Image (tube, rainbow, N blue to C red):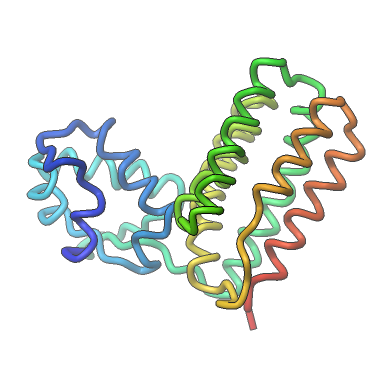
Length: 220
């Protein structure tokens, strides 16, 4: 963990609140700056952020609820490291959630939300073209979470909020090194279908997108 802590801090900030620390760790997971299985010692994190272990415990508890952090009594918390069977289960659950959410989003998307989605994908494209793969992956995850908000189904959105960072860990662990990450084009096509309120096309594109994601993984 010591090697990765500087990447979580901005301009040497300390004494941050749990609400400020949580997105730092969450983004680090989505950007794959923390390898799967990384130890997350409360004392080291507390010292780095200038807060008590109680504050860190709240942050880790929230991430544990999302299944991306593993906490056990008398053990140091650590980032999840899904095995191939767990990875397949996560991807299957995500497909069920995403294919339901895309139908709802197609029915409920407002013009302002479409613009926000396009802005997000534009940022994803820019990072991809600059070779900033981790940032592009994080923004790709944010696209799916934003799409879930557009669908306006809070329980499903919360469910997906745990599956997206888990997927990022799975990609970090199992993606073939020869694969090119270029999801922004697929995201843009999904937005086009949602904007047209073309439910069948949006659903087909989401399936194709998830198919390509899974095809890049070597799960043995």
